[in-house]
Length: 196
Image (cartoon, rainbow, N blue to C red; front, side, top):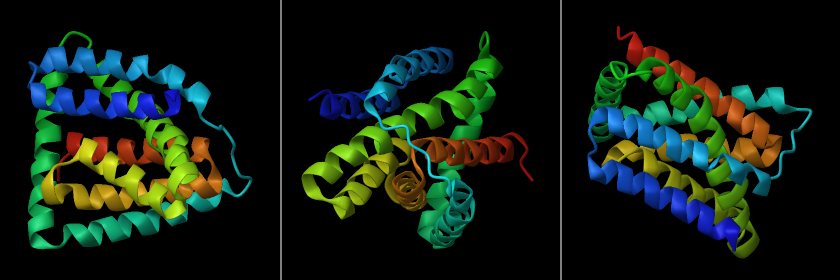
């Protein structure tokens, strides 16, 4: 039962935080606490790693190419750009909060990859797989991940990336998915911080 409730609570909290429109610093502090509160859920996940885990990197690169191709579709690309701009504004404003730069980095580089992989792949993917099969696990866990991260057509590339993370989780293990998610966030964070 906990394995169903924990992802549902996480998703509900993420959606509520997005809709609440808290002041930037309050949002930063609350999201840091919320993500940290879900760290113990990692005890419910299977922490296996394949000896072939280095293969996950080229697999995810192909996923990013597919997500990038989806972003080339004009309405999707426009929504992706809006999401990217909103994230950039949030990061820059949040950096002005007390401990802002540190908390933004901790959220983006540590808490988000760890907690999101535990919730969406380590728990939700497994619950859906056990009840409805592998295909449903890929679709449902990836769709919910996309909903939490993007709105409208901007969620399409996120959905594709989530499918890639789900594949990496299933084939190479949870630690590999966390590592790939970390690299994805690190690159995205760097791009947002250093626009061309």
